[in-house]
Image (cartoon, rainbow, N blue to C red; front, side):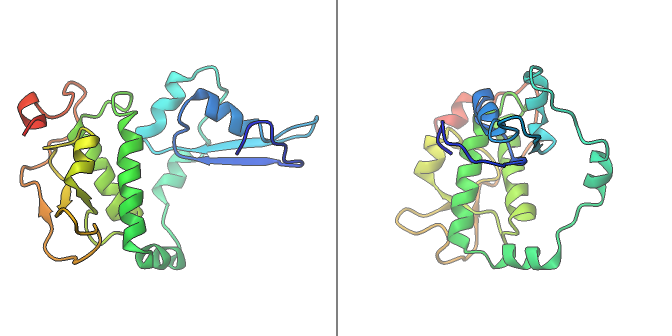
Length: 193
């Protein structure tokens, strides 16, 4: 939404996922409660994204009192599950790639190493987007993301579209270690393979 645009009578703004920065959050929330009217803003974050609340104490964001209960009972209605399962695999591949790229910018704040980031993205793909397998990425895309050699990624051969010819998945064979607060990602040798 462009700055300076006014949408009258907006009473609720719902943000899903991390804003790119504090200004983006402020700008979005500013779409509601204008001209003396009441309004409310809601932000939905995963547990990994909840660091946003800690690093932005200037915002009066409070967890919903029933957050734990909501998370414990969360399940998607079957029409939504069916729609996610039927979604175009190419779109899912693009969403997975975009998710990895965006979340990589917050990797240190989430206290994840590169393997933990990939593990989180794979969980998102399999459980959140209902992919049948981990989406494949081109090796050059993985290199540009700085994730070369990270366990858990699946690759597509050059010139082949990621969702084409869904045969056996070529996965990096090393087991994914759990996320670590101390590790910063693959070793220098792994990064330059």
